[in-house]
Length: 103
Image 1 (spheres, rainbow, N blue to C red):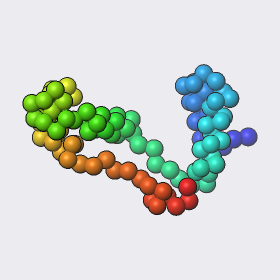
Image 2: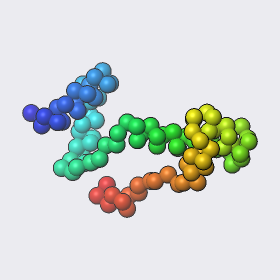
Image 3: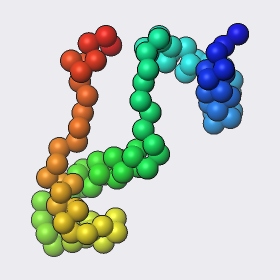
């Protein structure tokens, strides 16, 4: 019998993927990698913001008025120009194996 929280996650994954065998494989994979540890799962808004910022950095062409410049990106993503500047200047925070030596 699975712990209550794990069973709940299994149900969510089964609903999401429509296949209980895929859900169970994901649970087993997570168990192998993170079993016995507490892990942080960010809020959906945080994930969406990180994906948006990564997309902005990926397409930014280094210009102000270019097709993928500051002005166009501000309009496309409905952000201020100063926010776009901050995003493209900041490097994405990446975790490395040295951050997680147990992996």
